[in-house]
Length: 251
Image 1 (tube, one colour):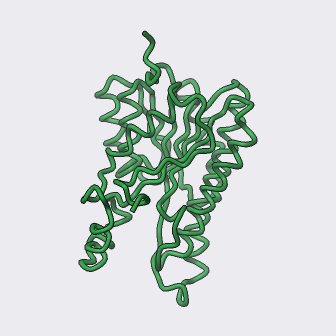
Image 2 (tube, rainbow, N blue to C red; image 1 turned 120 degrees about the vertical axis):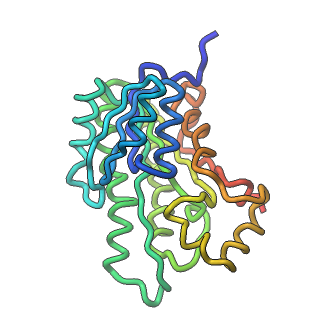
Image 3 (cartoon, rainbow, N blue to C red; image 1 turned 90 degrees about the horizontal axis):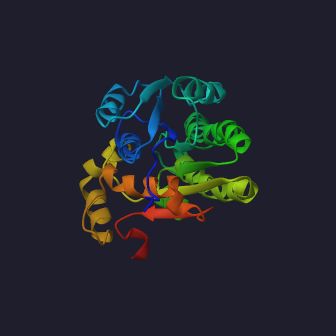
């Protein structure tokens, strides 16, 4: 029988692929058979090396996604180096923390530009390519703050709420063109972005008490969800936000 989760012969772009969630997703896609373009401001040398050890083609694509200037180049370079583009994972993101009454315009713009504006315009560039070939998968990385407000992260909350709406908008426009657009909403995952929360004893305790699984997530916990949404097994899944949160939203 054909394995519906097999990604052999497909090319995936993963942004922010040098560490954490992006690295874990890139390697999960590679393990399922995809070749990967690892995009980021910092060269994802370790990720590329590990993907090649899995027998896949993998390439570094350097791009600073704090602006939209490089987005078309990401698509063009991926197609040139790996021969196509079938899957886009919009993972790259930043976070800035401060009380809402003190939050600066600089921090607002930095987060929204990276987490939302660049996601849209990279999806647009990839979408044009995918529509031309009649198929493709786009996976956005959302957040628990796509559903909740959080505290002290106003621009991050706004950007991740926007990701939820953008995922549905693109699914509405592109589903009939063969493009699936979905999102993964990670729970509290142990990464560089959450280091401040993990180091705050009281906040860490309150988070742990709310997670039914009783632990912070590991980036590798997101790999299966990404493979599923990128694969033929999810051919009729569109506009969905899949929470991978240890049960956080259920509590």
